[in-house]
Image (tube, rainbow, N blue to C red):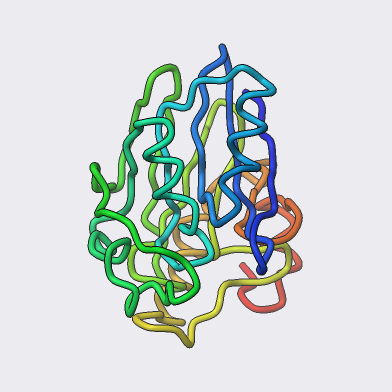
Length: 203
């Protein structure tokens, strides 16, 4: 499975395009839809879905345009089902809002085309934050819950520092140390490095 990272928008939010056998999933297209479209065209890929780790504005800015361009469905946790269409929730004053997701995520295994992965509910930064776990590839897409030696903000609407600590210690840190973490901002890390060196939430 290939992973291509596109830092998008003023906050340089990481949009991930994961692909194999010419099929692709788009994770957190925060802005600049044309960059996503250009890469997908260059690689002759067929997008199958848009996956959202959560619905803050810097992760959803290009959802509407990409959803319409490719006629594909959007997946988002049920706790934030209305956030795509409600700017006061997602702080989307700078970006157009879009329709609600076609599919509501819950914890468990999910298959989309050739992709099979686990959805882990990891609230704290937001109530519906999720992480996507590709066990065979040892890859985690953590959104804004876990960064390299950092964590997501917990002073936002419906954030919870207690939930974030629980999500890390009781969920993400339970995964194998050699799993690579692809965060919503910044560079990759590993579960082992975060357990040993994260100054905010050590194991």
